[in-house]
Image 1 (cartoon, one colour):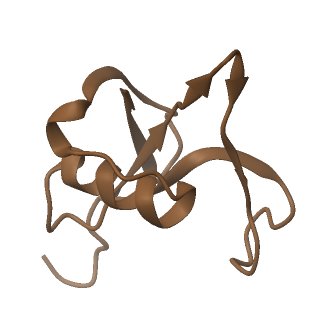
Image 2: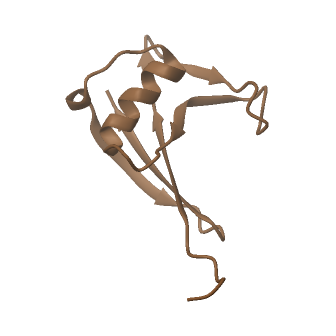
Length: 93
């Protein structure tokens, strides 16, 4: 196959937490990408765990929300069509 770079899929998980009509957001900091901007609780999946496990990890790390893997249901999946494709899998509590 030579030096040709292989196709890469960067997977991310996003959580939508809503309470009393308010949405939990996190503010990006010290990442070097979009710092200072707000986002849903989110993170990249590293491929070593299921997407549910990845979402539970990110919910705790980024949002301070402890959840069980089976507390979630799959919501949506889409790709943005970029040269390096990205896939989003969203879960709702």
